[in-house]
Length: 241
Ligand code: C5P
Image (cartoon, rainbow, N blue to C red; front, side):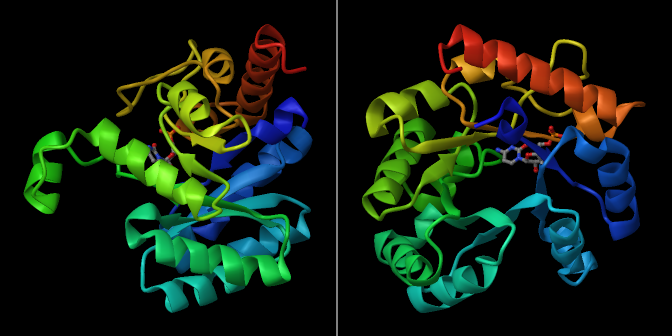
């Protein structure tokens, strides 16, 4: 897999006009884009068609969470050409994830089915309040990742700091999709546990989700190129290319 295809640019824009402007500025510099709830709803799903028309690949970040049948049917709809990755909440349970895998694999062998474990916005206090448990977030997340793997899911969203442990526990083939990446030359914004693209690749990340370092850069095409160069360096150091 090319270094460029490990970079997923987060299109965190309220309107399709702004998102298209960015995709056009970057041109051939990126192939993979993340579309989340805001842009998906604001564009009534049309952003997907636009990106597909430009031969881009989409990580559809809608984080499905419902009963097994409903989630599986939504996943079948998500499995359109050019949506190469989408996600469901692992807290929907093993039955739900297994049903997603079963239904999707009848029609689509390739797309990557990714689980969200514990939202990183939740603090340990909130986890205690919500789930009535003293279990650490890390243990809860690892358990959910294991259930995702046992259900046949292809990987998880995780911090680049956790990617190594997940690979060690669940195998090299289990994918790690990592936000919280910041090149040394960019602002940290509201991200706290950050890592550079190079270190993230060396720490077991398969895909990096990068937003503001590229989308807010005065020259987004240049920023994307620099991130890809760092990914390449990290892959070389890790002996992966
Ligand atoms: O702009 P930035 O690079 O921080 O964007 C990262 C993207 O990854 C955003 O779309 C954000 O919502 C998403 N994300 C994250 N942290 C998580 C999960 C998702 O930053 N734990």
